[in-house]
Image (tube, rainbow, N blue to C red; front, side, top):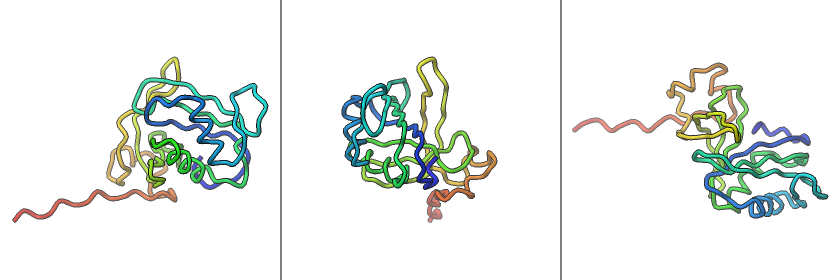
Length: 159
């Protein structure tokens, strides 16, 4: 989860666009400063890259994610290297809420519609977490996250 936990573990990300597996691993290696290889390979970090439908069709599973590097930091650096948005789970238990790392490295909370397919989770209809989205009402609330909802700008009053 994108909670700043620095323990070795598993990261599951989705990337906007169909990005080649070698390019994904290269971006990850550059962000982590470690060798990243396909499952079954011999390297510091193992990664599986596969494809589904949806707005974020490239799925990246990172095994043995290194301690000492926050997931959000790594995802942000990968998004910049790929020039594509990266979705990662946030620190709530709300099943529709994610953090998106934008291609410029910015991190922001979003809600996503997700459907499980035979190939894996398909994610569509990404929208900002504003605190007023019906998905924000799912417990525990989005306001408990370290990635606080961003209220939508109010419309100016009619003249």
